[in-house]
Amino acid sequence: MPEVNLERLNEFCEAWLRKAQACDNSIAGVFDRFFALWIVFNRLYEESARILINENDQSIFRFRWKNKKPYGPPPDRMAATIFIVRFCGENTLRSALTAARRMENALHFIESGQLYLHEDYTTGEPDYDRDQKLVQCSRQGDIQALMALIYQARCNLFHGQKAYSDAQRPLLEGMNEVLQIVIRCAQQKMQQRTEAQPERFTL
Image (tube, rainbow, N blue to C red; front, top):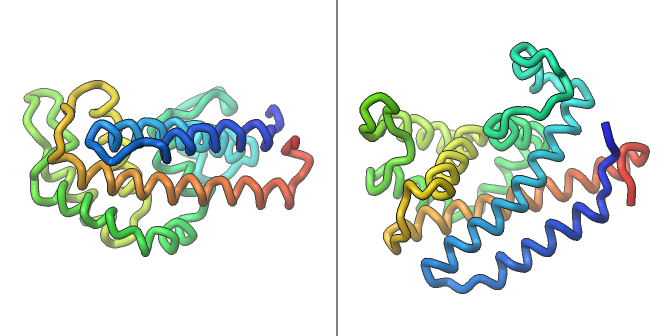
């Protein structure tokens, strides 16, 4: 596996984090902040997945069973919801997210049915039960469930299935808060691994 160039990775992430910080608080700005943060998150979960695959981490066993090429790119959804949690450490993320006040607003927004994320692909009808289950699991400390909600919201937003609306502000602000926390945790973990395993990273 190619070494991770930590300096270039940090430069990339910090450039997009500055773009996210520069966004205003209009609804368009909140959307733009989410997109900028997702670009950083996407880069980090891809790097995290590559590292875990190279280390034969137990979280990749299911992936390898389905994919005969063990070092092929992992499924995007799996990297964004499972591998990143494994890489950062679920307890670490759970602790860091304890103070995420806006996250609860986002969960309440979904729970109240003001916006649905999943749907029945055969009928096109909202799958509120699936949304509710993920909300409940998120409240119980299941970080993978929380990331699954955010990933699905991202899919809807990026594919234009959710229109610009100020009513979505609680959801977007909550997701932005979570992404910022996960990004910082992933960056810290990268730095820690650099110090512990310098042969796998370049500076």
